Image (cartoon, rainbow, N blue to C red; front, side, top):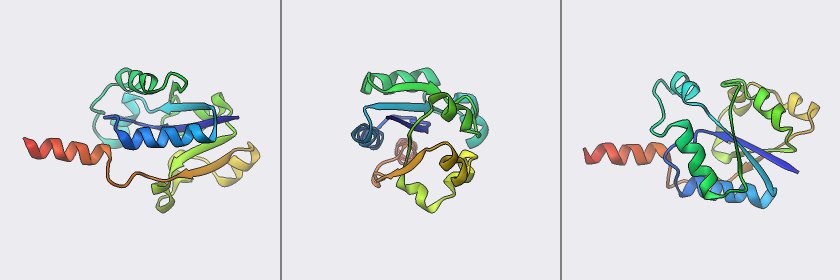
Length: 140
């Protein structure tokens, strides 16, 4: 069984760690589709703090059993997903309040047609990359 997840994972913190550990409880094979610097810059309007390679190395050093691939499709995640052929896609439950299907450019039917289960993992409320960035700026 293969579990796919994607994201930016900028300024790696314990919320990221808890999320990835939860993914590993679901499946021994976890693949992270890591957003490229170019995609992050175009989507968020600014580059990540850490480069793609720095973020990739951080995740790999957190746990060598996690495979990290580039999110080759940018806003269309289907190419990366289909390259992995996962059984499960895992996302944080903070996406319950947002339109994850629109964000990833697929539909519920597409998931069903490809026999992929979407699971939500509890989001770590008290930490985020945005909160860390705000703290750093406030020290300025």
